[in-house]
Image 1 (cartoon, rainbow, N blue to C red):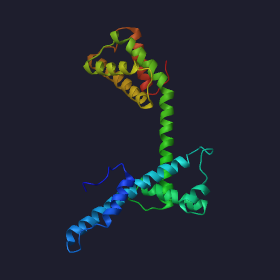
Image 2: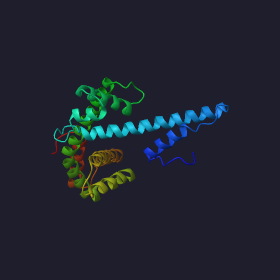
Image 3: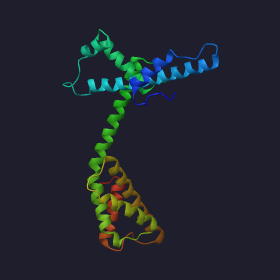
Image 4: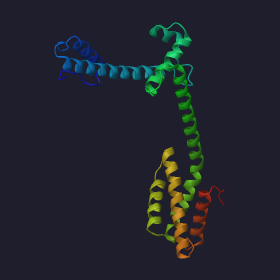
Length: 229
């Protein structure tokens, strides 16, 4: 195995495996010969996996979702694959998807279509969550800025200060990803929750000034989903 090519060199690995197949130990040394056969079989299966992953990636490039202008015709793909019908090419694609996405299941078009539908639903859900996060972010950002501006007037403890520090760090960013927007909303919730708990424990208002109390109240309304005042 010291002559085995780099794992990234798929063609080199295949060539080496084919060469080694003709150089097995003598049949008189059965145990070592069997071990070599099994190792080479594992290597071929790994190569098949790599090739199928590459083939699926090329299929997705050839048939991008929602972009009809850049799609390679199914007939042209069938000519390369040796498949005559368009339906046969589509079924081949779904079998390939099933093999790569969930190798424990059967290689069937139905499994591939089910995986495709699940992935589409996941993308739809994530897109919806991202749209909601973006729509809500401007309210979160305004509430966070008011709370940070009123920070000298707030009645805090160590935990509240830690959440406010985090909130201030997020507020200083010029551009936030959808994930960061969601994180900032969560941190605002935690900060204002801790301020409310701290005020309740001390029997005081959460802030010394009317402006500070309004900032806390607005953040609390946003936390429970009420419209801003």
